[in-house]
Image (cartoon, rainbow, N blue to C red; front, side, top):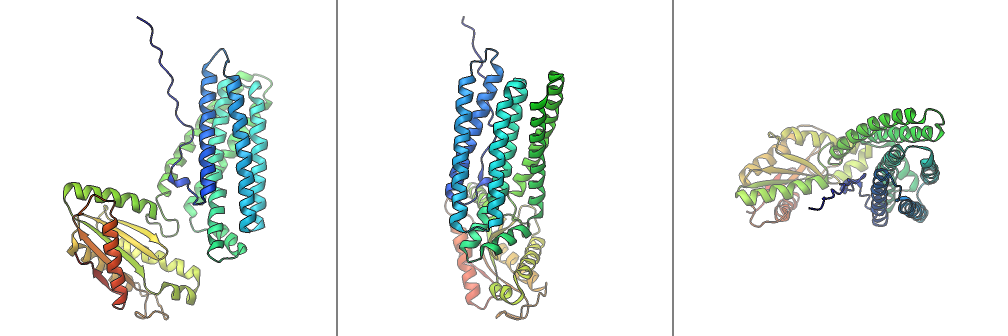
Length: 396
């Protein structure tokens, strides 16, 4: 009987998911191209390190050459985009400097492969590329995307840049700084490996151990990033993407089990007037207070409060029928008024208030919850038409 050969199982060094989407279609497509090339290089490095005959040299050189060429292309396209959009020069110069730094660093590390042990050099390059790509997308490119969106919405480039520098999401900023530090550590450690002339094997073993610890820390940060990727940075409730995922799951479960599912759509009354009267910082604080009040109104851990968009919130209420959804909606309206946040420009009363549309029933179709959203949204529109500062239950 012929001996069977067990093929090695390769794990991608970098896994793309929705949290890395910037909303800039060309940039996102190029990022996915980079991820594919990074993972191809990682697999080639793994295969080369496992092959004592060293027959993978030409393949490695080809993959690395294509990776560098595509990276330079991506940088060129990104810099042209910044120029077209009129992004603040402070961001543009910082962005270009990071591009130049990466090309120099990765070239130096690749040239040093011959002077380091195969496993250490492969692990080092893979770790460096993984940390760099996470920092590049989650940091500077997400910042660029937010600035471009703000400019397209009418802000000046200076306003968009300074708003971005001020930032709201302190937790995400802390995590990005952690990734940045890991990236710097990996860069420094690999630079030291290049200069190692004496006691090479001992030095490589030490650095390999340090890289393992750094990678373990990076994995821990990635777990936290996934959690923060589900959270709206300003309001500290679920974001729209996570809301959509949870609604689809809850709707499918309710349909399968033939149990009701409740939904609230909440809109702050005359919020634009509030912003115009008190300013955007006060507006942000107002939204945060409302989000906390709505969250505190929920009585079960399974109820999900999310930012649906702008000043609009949404609440998923599993196993809650129409009457139950209406009761929760009434509590939300009362809780927000009880904050007694003055709103002299409101046409609904002296304090900040909300209008709520409620719906609840067993899903009639196996859909992602779009029918329920439409019903609650229609009820919300009716609440506004009836004078605001109230809740309306959808016709079931």
